[in-house]
Length: 388
Image (cartoon, one colour):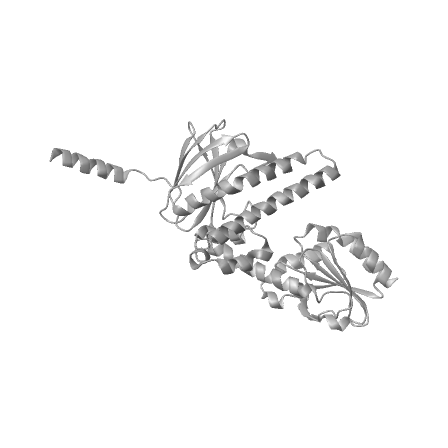
């Protein structure tokens, strides 16, 4: 009887023992501090940057390599564990590298355990506690060689000549292509695993729709669904852009459109028939777009008797667009392309814009003369040759 009571008491004490959200042990720590970053998965698609208030940064101590971290998880959450000794400084800020952290994913009531070690600049570890994290840990072991080689090639670029850097970058690009192929192989082999949904976010955008079709419901509707919905929208937009490319070529009619100007009036492209027109797809967030404004102004002043420029702001809020128009004193027609319209109604999609800035020269007859991506001399040379 006494023995039974002792056993019951021991069980009760064990049941009351704290269950930490994340526990772990890491060998070869020379700095006992760990950085833990976490964010609700549903918030991740809308993050504005590393300083977004929806991201939480914590620092904890791993005494003798052992640590425990508690954070009430109410929604599916991504955690990133980073040993401080592997973080690098850049422009006064500390950041991780592609081989210095480990991601894990927890839903309400779940716990995970980390067993790891530091090998030079690489954080090697395994996860246990949930099926998803165990699968993620095994898959990451397959990916780690690509990340290690990629990081090595990136580090090797420092101090090299332009030609040497280009050669190293080409090798880096090939390594990352093999890494993405590994992600796609995982989806093919595990279409019903929730982790396959996460892998979908790591493959080329032109493959997303094809591989999404291969996923079973368990992968489509997992905790990663909030990541997949905007990804599928982006992939659908990309497909429409590829289809539009065949129409946005020299000699083809420029698609007509109507958008709102800064003073909230309707502007229609066809109203400029009889003049040369440059459509300038840009955004206040685009550094190269802003850098090109002074040169655009010079060419506008030179040719404005024959030419009109239409600045089409994309991927901005109306407030940021109007502020940028005023700040940079843009003297041409400025219109706003709403960012929340369906892809099929998006003017940037209709003109097959895949990067910014993009400029389209249109002749007085309404036919496309040329399309130019980026801020380079080819556009200005073509404009001068066309109008002079």
